[in-house]
Length: 421
Image 1 (cartoon, rainbow, N blue to C red):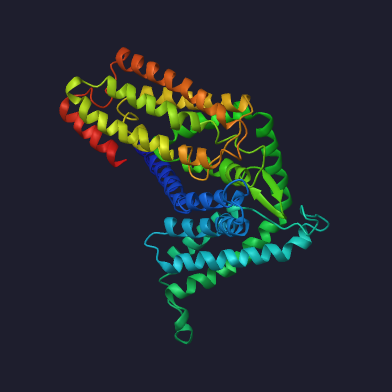
Image 2: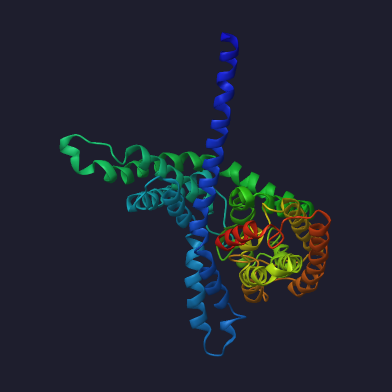
């Protein structure tokens, strides 16, 4: 009896620990959404201000430069936005002090990196011939965001002695964050060379295996959406992987490198355009056509709205959530096809990118920067045909309960849930 009780105790704790890790991962993923939400407006301004857009208007070159600078300002300080976003999203019951602590921490880190650069990067030059600087990209911002959030939770109610009473509670957090940032920045500086070598090697490995790497990323990206962990997967390839230097500035990540003009960027973005603009709307058409006749009007309205959202903006969750759980085999097929799309466009050498998502808005805005973007339309139409007939076949063959095919009460609840997603 005692032996059984002894061996059972750890087993009961393991699921709780796993649940805690999973919950923290989800919380971190949600925290990443806050700074990412700022990027569409910045991306539009940056793109509109370039020489082949508003800059092509006679006499408006300087005005276009100003517009581009406004958008580029957000991307330049993207690590700071991640620091603030992570701090606010991660800390429980956070307030303005949490954000202030993150800003203070990142400012200290930024200046320490600048001071440490001539020491750890002695003799290394940037693309303009000046002193190369330590640049961890958004990873530095995320580190400071987490540090400030943790310090907030531990010390925002701390009481100081009477003669230091002014610095009690929330006022103490930015001070502690600044001190922590100093130590962390120095330590990170000494490992930067190894970090840069590893990052460059990883970027080269992906570039050399873009077909397989892109395909796996596309599949796993979709499969993680049901559990809310896809933002964690997206972070490294979209915001950290690879480097591209121009005008003395180094850009990291597939998104920033593409917008900065890197011709090799887009490996983890291009293949989403055929799926989000054409394939998923065709899947929505198949779901509508296979709904029960008396449900088609209701389902049609929901599917049309979700399909237009996917096509125009690249936001696919309202459509995917409509069949993700009620017809999971269909969702797995969708994830597999998404992977093949990324693999295919990479095999063909097509390069495109986005500031927010792979919808028509980003497609049109970035058409001039892309390489072979026109081919995404016939590829997308081909995937639309595959999605429509494959979805229709699978729904009928396996009698999947997609919206409009369940019992009436269940159907209404499923459709209502999809609209709220």
